[in-house]
Length: 296
Image 1: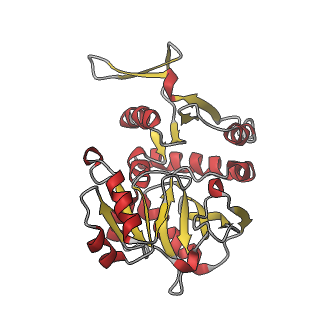
Image 2: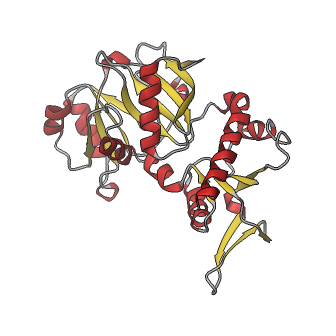
């Protein structure tokens, strides 16, 4: 079995370490780290799919793992998936997870979790009406993004008006506004799931009293935990299954009424932890691929 781990080349050493840690464990499984920029998909006149890699014809893999969800990786992944290759983290699920509003729609339809009250906003959104809906302070952020980039906490109508004026008509509705969950200021819980099963958790917390974000790139600290709480395990299972992702990181906020979903990540990060779990991950990929073949 040949598994392609597809990226846009912008990956850290952690991904290489994860793959190296499982090479040779199962002699029937070959795992390759593949740069999507070096892959050229071709549809022949006969309708047959063909792949060229580094300028030479290449066989399609048995399994494709879209590792980063970047634009170039998504384009190549869709082509390879359409050729009938088993997809670990299918591109449509990755695309949905990248868009926070699409994620909320998908999970709301499945009744999988409580979510933050969220509004699509544009340069023409009325700030007074938005405050009437969400209150202050409120969080504003891009629909797509990671690492806390572009995320702001606005405290006044003037700050909100300034933010809305910074948006352009061409952007349309590419930003969202959300309730601010004060009980979860600077802290959250990420649960990493494999085929719906929680495999480990990461408790993130920011010691800066003026920083509301819990992202490590925003200065937060973190600690790994085992997910033993049945409420979290059950909630994570429902969210992961509804998302369509085989591997994902689920970000939960703390509230007096229970956990609230904030987003799902198809590339859950913290790959320095993955060498411990890598044999399990690739064994599950192999098992599910074989089961999919048997079902055909």
